[in-house]
Image (cartoon, rainbow, N blue to C red; front, side, top):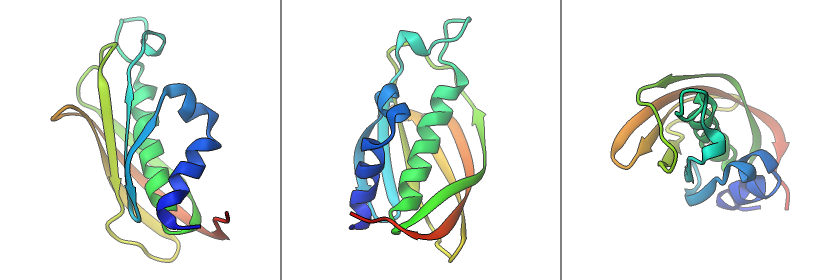
Amino acid sequence: MKGEDIPYKMLSLDAFSQGLGIEILECEIGRCKIGMTVRKDMLNSMGKAHGGISYSLADTAFGFAANTHGKYAVSIETSINHIEALEEGDYLVSESVIEKVNNKTGFNIIEVRRGEELVALFKGVVYRTNKDWED
């Protein structure tokens, strides 16, 4: 399977990301850009998007990009900084670019944006297994 096709396969098997309405906007080896719209059912008790929404979007971008190199890759440590509150109807975009690939681990910083505005900053460490993605 070609690396840039892997995120599409992953999304087709990922009921959680599908339920969030995540869509792949651009994808190539080492890079994946995805987007989604904040819905009413994603709001917390204060009427703002639950923190898990921007986290899930960034984590998905991270996972998709990490897997484009052809090996199963899983996150082993992640964190997020929420910079701006998110509202119902906001369209969010997250892009993950894997700058450096080594045999087993990789580190990445992923931005979540609302238009040009940075709303969250996600950091992650990925572990690459020996298992290949197959067709």
